[in-house]
Length: 281
Image 1 (tube, rainbow, N blue to C red):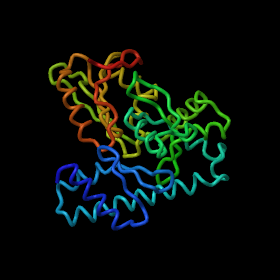
Image 2 (spheres, one colour):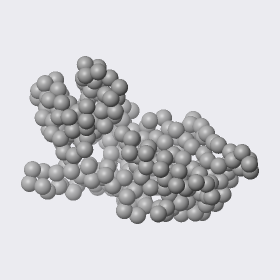
Image 3 (tube, rainbow, N blue to C red):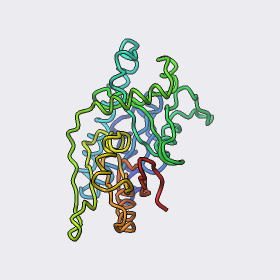
Image 4 (spheres, one colour):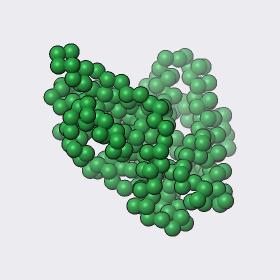
């Protein structure tokens, strides 16, 4: 099935399985519902799996996928709606920074849009720019079954600033056990490390762990030099590459992974120069 055909049939199928919930196609693979405060989810992951399955298997897979994310959303909402749980002292050590792209920020904002096209700013995500106009940092609470991203009204209730939030969330990130392993490739002629890559554990924090923790930058510098390229095509996979390598191939690989990712981050290669970030044109 083509993408639009899949989305149309998915909505029809889901409407039959969840008759009390309205499913509305907004754009791409994004589906907005009348569940909670306009809960929105993305169908790209089950669509990609559907290309290898027959239609019956595709329906079963989609149903399990949506059931799972609804359950996760319910658990997050139940805790987030509990005033005793949502005390800063209880959740402070569970708040982490996430690197997200502009599409994620825009999609989240649209999910809170009223019928008249206006948005209550107090319920929109807290975020700050990270790299030019495409990458941002926002913050989420680890609920256990997923993350509940912080909104502007949360900071008002907590009585903290974005800078304070940024500081202690990075400390939480640094305190996480580092169980992931770096893989690498050497240049056969020079025996120098040509590239390093990290495949995460599907928790959405890989990009943050790599980019926001200074010890990791120091590690990469020891292997690749103070200047190196980094590609972040999706949230759980990153590659670092030595300057002087084939940048065109790196761009091509990055764009391909970004295009095929269910959780894309950045379609551009980034130059890291002594801890400073800029896009490679």
